[in-house]
Length: 140
Image 1 (cartoon, rainbow, N blue to C red):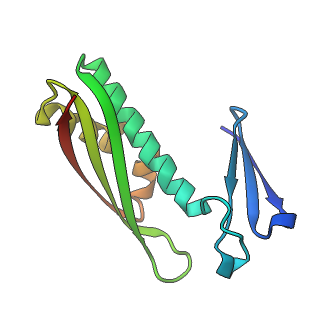
Image 2 (cartoon, rainbow, N blue to C red; image 1 turned 45 degrees about the vertical axis):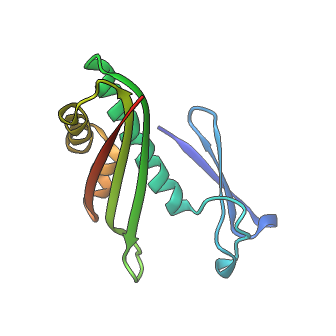
Image 3 (cartoon, rainbow, N blue to C red; image 1 turned 60 degrees about the vertical axis):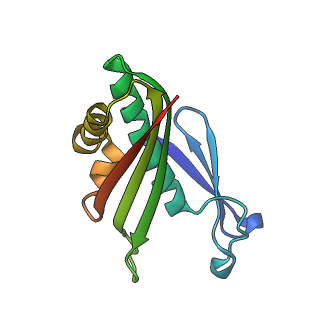
């Protein structure tokens, strides 16, 4: 995997990232750090990527189990260390999974499998952060 990051000096503390798959992602800093608040912060993109990684796993695990999953939302909240390096110290992921005939057991298993075996991002972040999860089911 490869990503090329370029600083955009004309925009203060903005950066563009071109991913190995050819997609462009913009990031920016807060005004108090020289940015213009035009895009997500780099650490927000880490959190968003982690949420996307685990949501992908949960949906795929449920689909492979032949469950009728129709939606998956993950609300990720976090806390960071107060001093540099301001690593994540706590992350909570709340899943809202929508489907037909889904059971608590199936969703719980999918969430656990993601966080224990498949989601590289959350497994990596668990080296510094306490990661907790919760979920709710919604009928489609």
